[in-house]
Length: 271
Image (tube, rainbow, N blue to C red; front, side, top):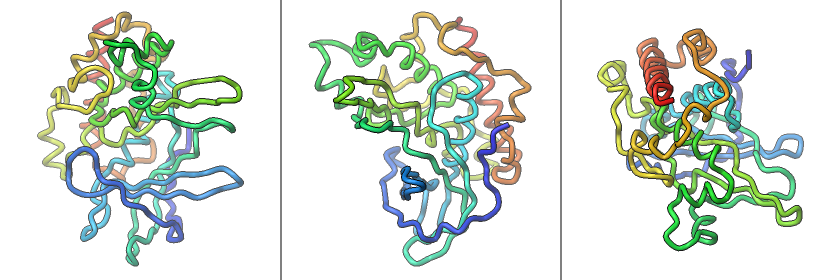
């Protein structure tokens, strides 16, 4: 079993945090930082942060859950750690869980947002999905669409899909799937909120590929049974939530599991 949750408190007060506005339209900010470890860049991010109350969200926990889900389904993705740490923001110390991940670029690669890549290389009248298919990325995009339905990802803008290019080697590839914090029941702040959340609701989402509906976007996938190489089973619950007891309440964990499993079964029924 992977060890992605570090519950022993770390001292990360040396990190300097920059503010990034929450693109979902909700109040608050997401803070990001970075460091270099053995010559390799490492990135850190917090859940939704409020200057008065501190860290109020649980988006970082979603990253770990989705990381593990993608491992089960056999999809290439960015690997995260969930770390309990002291941090310093605006001369105040906060104890919180945060996410960390290493840079996914190989030496010589530069990254380009998918929306910019589309604008520079698409043909007249070509949809975003058709463009990706023509570029040879159909499997990747189908996996992304299916995943975003299962976890109800609200923020798959063009900037959250990246192309990695190596000009000297003349190679181009998609970055591993990343940034899944604004998913699942991230809008719920209390157990009561979680209990009332409709796990099958088709909420409006920011999708560069397809429409605002993650459900409608499933119609773009021509061969659903070929999307994932792995399968999710009831036995996988323990793996998804390993070391997360007490990080989220049992009410949250139950709701998140039911959401993932029921939406996964719906997608499987299409095959």
